[in-house]
Length: 315
Image (cartoon, rainbow, N blue to C red):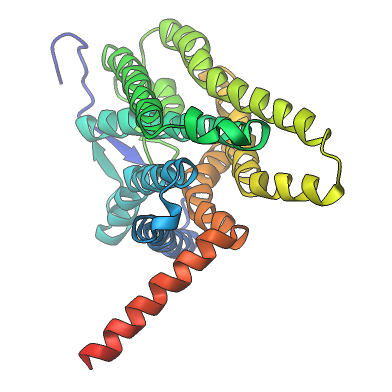
């Protein structure tokens, strides 16, 4: 490729999750079905929030952003794997692979930042309900999301530039369905010490900051809720956090097990875990929020009713 990184590899081979044709067909069907559900489910959440004035609040503003990021997160990896299966190819160009790495890091970090912002929003709503409108002003909400985008893009750019400087020689087979940074690092014939150190330091800090903010927010929420005089008040307060807390557990449960160790120890179990939070988590998020949230369910029913009414009108 370029002269600076002296890359002799012009493409990588994505071997997928299985090398047997029958299993590949099953994985293709699962990925296609889950991707369609991810796109349609998250789009419904976005449409429901945008069409219902009652949902034009900070909480649902962040939820709409999370759904948008989940759509992009899945679209970075899954479509390429589906297309390769349909055309009978396993190749991805060097530039496409680097682009996948950049956007993968951007959206996975954006997910964690949005989850931390949503945790802070729940903290303010439960612990400071009388000052909620003043503290969570629209300008602050937009600013929090904008800052998150800036940090995640700079972080992704740093890792991608460090990846581009590496030399890739003869081995180009990636035991994954997309260009995950860790399997790509294992293929390099250069010293990846700087990449590993950066992943542990900068990457660890970028991941630990939103995780810590989320944990601290829920610690304050729990201490505040336990002071409520009635059991009904406690249940009502915790019910507003149930959906978000479930998503947080799904998201961080897989990530902490995959990326908190050196790239040299990346295993098959890590590949399966990565597939889980890149494909399954974005798919279940809209169901978790819609099934456990009365406001979202009401907005979805209104949206469906309007759609059915318009179809009957045109008939």
